[in-house]
Amino acid sequence: MRTIALLLLLSFSAGVATAHVTLPKVFSDNMVLQRNKPIRIWGWADKGEKISVQLDAAAAVTVKAGASGDWQLELPAMHEGGKHQLTITGKNRISLSNILIGDVYICSGQSNMEFVLRNANNSAAEIAASSYPGIRLLTVKKEMSFTPSKDVEAAPWAECGPATSGDFSAVAYFFARRLEKDLHIPIGLIHTSWGGTNIEAWTSWDVIAPLGNYSNADLAKREADRAAANQRLTQYQEALRNDKGLSEQWFEPGKVTGWKDIQLPKLWEQTAIGNADGIIWFTKTFTIADGREKQKAILSLGPVDDNDITYLNGKKIGAIDGYNTDRLYDVPASLLRPGANTVTVRVTDNAGGGGIYGKPEQLYIQTGSEKTSLAGEWQYKISVVNTTFGLTDNGPNSFPSQLYNAMLAPLVRFPIAGAIWYQGESNAGQAYKYRTLFPAMIRNWREKWGDEFPFLWVQLANFMRADSLPAQSEWAELREAQHMTLQLPKTGEAVIMDVGEVGDIHPKNKQAVGLRLALAAEKVVYDRDVVYSGPVYQSMKTDGHKIILTFNNTGTGLTAKDKYGYLKGFSIAGADAHFYWATAQIHGNTVTVESPAVRNPVAVRYAWGNNPDEANLYNEEGLPASPFRTDEWKGITQQ
Image (cartoon, rainbow, N blue to C red; front, side):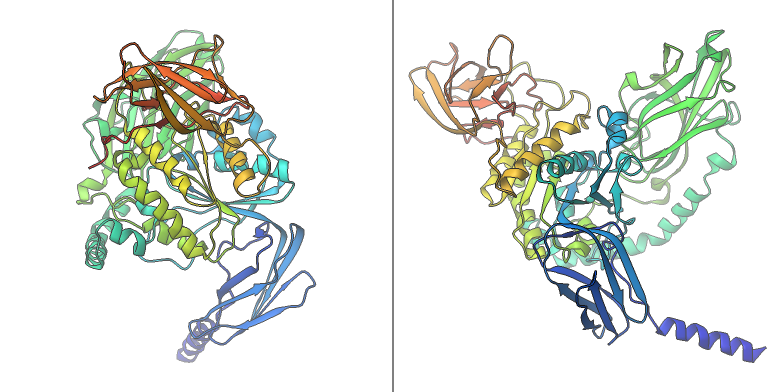
């Protein structure tokens, strides 16, 4: 018996000592490798192990793994095309197939980049028509780290099609679709984003530490604090796994007591629940008139942050993971009853905001053509939340660089054509500082990649209520900080101040966003002769009680997007810095602005507000003018 045990131990030890050649997750079947740049391949193996890499029938390139088992080599640059096969041979053999050579883009930011195609306008038709085998998709899973990771967590690359596109970034998809159509080259998209995150989370420690006055002692303390919380975190995670709401069957109507009142839809941080993560149950009883229960029914909850399991009259009817996905569940006819019915929703929130948070009109049950609103009074019952265990926010915004370390640093050896970025909402309150943070992050990424690759971004959309009078605006100042970053070389911007929605920070018209990013890429990356931007303010001069503005990027001419031809969105001020709405007229490539309230004007602002929804200066190609101001008066975020 002891002999058998010894043999098993020796066998196990030998298996551990002989490591297989492994590759980072960014390498898999169906991937896109960057064209016209040396193809860099790397991975891990045994110390001193000889690694051979071959692309198709070309001569193999060999290298030996270093003392730590790391290895890296380069293959010659190639032009676009496919399909190719990559073979990596050491003590084992890895074969990757259906590989294309094309242009690869990093797609990063916060929730509007994370926003999936399934939730965009006309999503069903868009997904059905998304068969583009020349576009390949890779989504990096959400991870945090205090130090740079060796690898990302990600599912393998996938061909773009109806089976894969629905859960991919909508902005990235529409961007790639336009490029693939116009350029006829394969496009690879590496989507690495996290909703609600600030720019500090995406910047490496060596850059953000001096900008934020952090020290290595701060980093060490943060790591120590997290280590001390690990035991409580383990207990919390165990409670999550053993949700008492499930074991006690809270989904059964009338099964348990102790429910408390709450108004929905609303993020639970805005209620008596407060700032907490975990599992909370919500329930509501509603009435169905006799006869309607026999009709086909749909239950709509709108978006739920993050995950839900939904029950009707004690029976599960659906479950979705993903905070920005609308919940629309078919209700079996056998479940509905005439009279009282009960819907119960188990919500799990991992970080940030949580709950059933959409618009009131998204909360309903529809039987046939009739809707019964479910907005208003609900009840809730807490199963398990992190605050019970003394845990505070340990999310990606709690300390800088955690997302750069886990979701970008492992990719910097992978050659790319460029990056697209949609972020800024979480930094609106520090817009003035964003003037420094944003260009610093772009330089940071380029330095880490060792390549001054093109960088394109989306300017913040219009959001919240429009101002009745000209006003200061954090969002306007953030857009200004973004626009100022065009001073960096090889940069481009998609202006979408006409795409947003008053009450939804996640506008669904991602088609326009992707198109405008693609137009910027066609100019900045590919130097094509295209109108890629709307009008951009260039200069001003005073003419009596008027100010005359000059623009570039006017395309074939300036136009007012208004059936009567009136320009809107302009305000004007004198030396007292008090702004009044102004009338404006187009004269060639200039705009004249005036107001009877300002006889000696010195400054003009355009589309300056959280939601400048009436601003309507465009070029004839249909691209909106970028918001601007001619003054340099101190803004509300300049602290």
